[in-house]
Length: 433
Image (cartoon, rainbow, N blue to C red):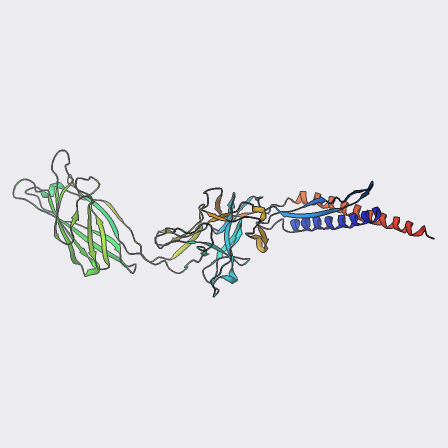
């Protein structure tokens, strides 16, 4: 029985070291594979116990663990959509073959690094056939609230490489200084014109023409101007007209003291807002509240446009895509705007090493890993997303070669045990002769 157990122990030793050799081979083969996580083989003794003072060899068994929690060094690249996670967390991806499927099911897989480029359909896809996933932003760039313990809100990241749809202007802020000398008796009463650009519902550029006409009194100073606004989209028709009166006191000199509506919608004194009805719809036109020095003023002898701000944009062409540290997929357009299209979250699980390893350095959540939670990059326990970077393999070649030599010696020793047991059994057989 003891000799037979020795033979069994030797066979198990060969099997365990063969398993270790397989992990070493895999590690060395993937020493230059981006995102590869080293596999480690552990040996565990098997004890049968003593029976009446006779020892019985139990042998050994091998278990393997992929050390997913280890992180490789970051390697710089020249592609803005090459990304890696610095710290804890993984970003979601899905197989390209599932994208656009009839059932709409995109199984979530996880990666710590990837090289993504826009394919012929606009998806950010890696050479290995995995598509980056994220939460799609609203047209204004705001990310809606999505569930953090579910993949239901995640969609494949798809970029419209042709044009960016224009957005209509809905708000404008404007202020200017009107020359006080023009409302004094005997002045020339020079009209002060200016133009303001806005964008209509189709992304076309239109113009608001604003003309300030001073009221010149017979004596003294009127401190009064007529503001006339015309719209190019309405064939330059007048859409609003107001009489502006400015304060001449020492305390509030030069600020608006009254706005009288001649035509158009009324002025709101508390907010300084006028709603202009242009051809494409209303625009909230802010000229400043009464008494505010941030709005319209009448000072000195010069006309100057101080502030002109607006929202909206015209149609633009895509010039670049990049992913920032917070996982935001940002698009740059030739019209000078930068817009968030998606946000790529980072998934975290209680036991990272419990994830199921798949092809292409991807992983899947399992009962052993625990349930995932989606964090914004940089929040909670997760790290940040680094672009223009890939994560290197965690394999140390020198260490693997050292273990290879040790494994070879251990394998040879176990083979020697089997050879010795065979010779002893042969001797036992020869006793009968």
